[in-house]
Image 1: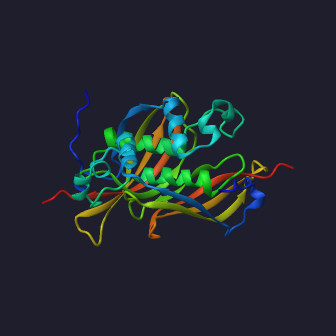
Image 2: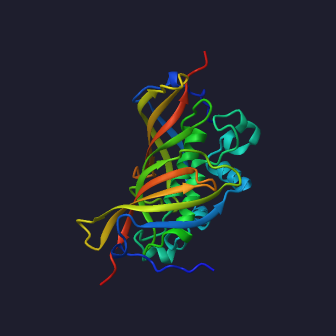
Image 3: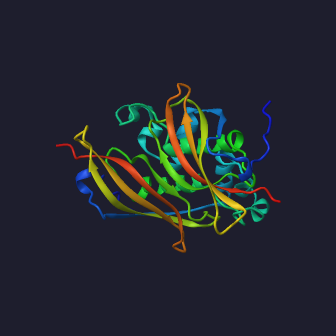
Length: 152
Length: 152
């Protein structure tokens, strides 16, 4: 049983704070289904075609890895009051995700800034690193997220 | 009938070159299905809950917008020889995508660098802007993509 953590406000966050998500296993059929809908390229759809590609074997779409990372954060990693709302950030995929990979997300808060125009809000910079079961990095997203102060 | 363009090699690209994709209409049921699988937050799942959220009405997950942008590029926007392979980049979501929005992607090549270690490859920086039917910007992804030289 997972305990559901209390939602976090800006007041609860500090630079250097870390969070770790649960895990998610990449299933080959889901990889292919995601690719068929959103990234229909042979190396995401077909094992044989992937072997002669730059990926050398079947690889998930990077956007699938990104979407799974969001699921992990929302459901288990980072419970932000009023929701986890990203404004954008720097994204990289150092290596592809493969069938059967077991992914988790490790986060660290890098920066916290209060909004000048909206005194009840802040922008938090958080680095989310997606790791597989061998602790290899599949994705890094250094994101700016919107976080509210605790209502007085 | 769309003509399928010839795949592009590094030799075919230049800074300032532009590409435009076809269009894709965001359907409310697909927005909710994507969110249920990857970004299960009330403002992506339920109209009533969204009204009292920071989004004020139902909004697609930013990762859904990103995935649709990839689909548009792969299927109609940018045909790169050996596939469209992103290494990463800077992503931002200036405004959310709404039910019924008709999205397209406009791309511009910003930079081209030859690989030092792999003489048959280069890294191309390309800005992909997702626009809706009112020409409002829903997403900007300034990405580094891997592009091969034409085989000799």
